[in-house]
Length: 193
Image (cartoon, rainbow, N blue to C red; front, side):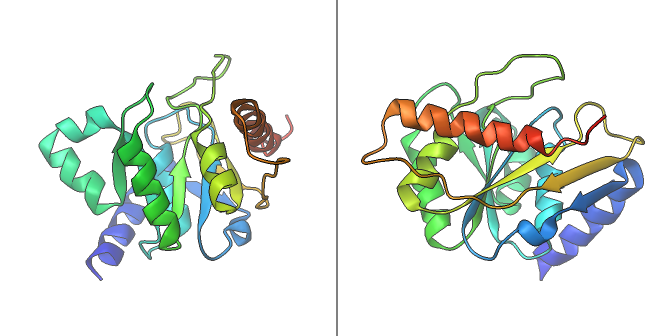
């Protein structure tokens, strides 16, 4: 109940500034899934949470450094975020992810691992691919209007869920190829200019 009240307060306040809209929400199938998107602004994860609705049915990775700020740490935890150490194999984050999947929650993951401004190159991480292949849950791509969003309007476009598959036991190469496919599907949702 408290989460739902907080959700609607945040939704209404942010809508005034961001005028966001959600396209393809019917693709947010019930049950566990990994929602993967492009990441260009700090607000991206909050907007994905708002798109998922007022029921707390998700978990979101957030960089460990954010949890070192006491007030922010409590807010992040209240809204389903959990810390991940970027640039290393964080076993506690993987365990938390698997636990959330088992509970039927959606994981919010930005494979690029950090904000990537338009025109910048990135090297997406294979964590989402690894989790999807090991648990057989779908990936739901989402394209978020890049760049500065306040007062400009912002659209989140959700694509159809898909189940990545590989022959035999997945290898590091398989994880990388699936990760590249995830990002292709994300960027394919961008509006044609």
